[in-house]
Length: 317
Image (cartoon, rainbow, N blue to C red; front, side, top):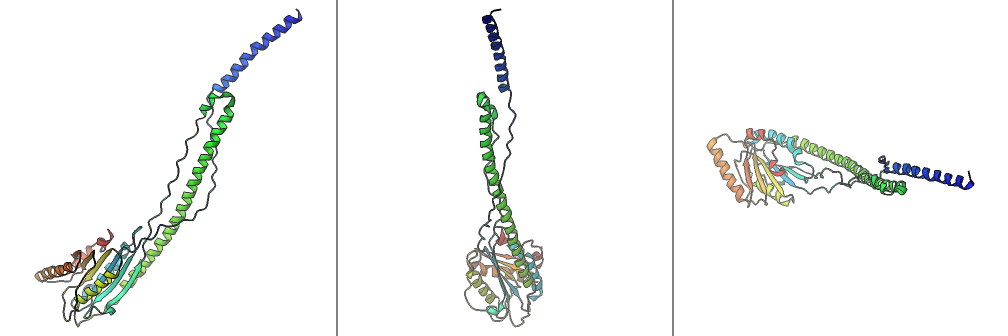
């Protein structure tokens, strides 16, 4: 065989092998690529939580306990009822409250009748987790098949971008969670402080001594003093609680009675034992109180007072 013929046959063999190799290589690119699972890395960033501002005072409550001979018999029970429900004046996001306890005596306008005065600050709203960006969707690596010779670089680029975006969102989530946890711990500490303050006030109210005054019942003087206290408070909701039989006797303080706007008068443990006289007394005093600016006047006898689930419902709902 001539040298030229040998060279020609060798060339044919190379040409026959080359297409097969190229086809095998192309077949590898046409197969579905395995899903790439990038490993996210997140670096927690410490944050300092700040609680929402404490709301301003929302409620002022003035309570009057009649210690004269005609009505003192229910006053200890009235004290305990109010003391047991003071905690209802505190709630997340609600402003603080002011509480003043005084007595109706023979000279009720005298400042000595104010036996207890306290203020409990408001409780901030409960913290919530701050919104964060949505996590990105996993990259579609099948798009890299369109460029078989640059597939590796294409997949790497898509995976790298996805990982960077995912890590950024994970960092957001970490910061938001850390801030929420810190704010929650601070809020719980504040809530515990408020609970202790109310418990202390309730104990003081329960232990408040009520001394019998048998020389007269100056109801008008007590109302004048209560109206002054309510008027000096900036709290928008105002409640006057009066535990009495509403039967004046002896000298009554003189002066015009004016309640500030929004005042609700609630007669608790209304001690009255004669049907016709009790109804007349309620009607007469309701007219006087409304004429003085009271928004509403509510009457609860001892039985109804004991059944009242929330004695402060008019200023907490």
